[in-house]
Image (spheres, one colour):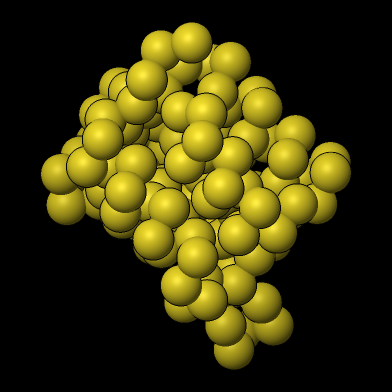
Length: 116
């Protein structure tokens, strides 16, 4: 399996283990009852790489991460995946862990650390 960018991997794993981000399922990001912002594991990746990828959260649809004119709400844009060194198989596995198996961010961080 292709290995991801080492520096991004370390930053992502640290972010997932930090308790800074609230976990959600089903989309990259969402406002939780207007009080808190929640992220899926891939939404955290978008958040930590937004400067390097020239991305931003869509001001009209806060669940979507936007690069240029293209917004994505369920998976990171291709530019984020390429920057991180992730392939579709990685994305599918991580979506399954976050959304279907409801693994914690710490469990997902351990998987990333040991396998990607």
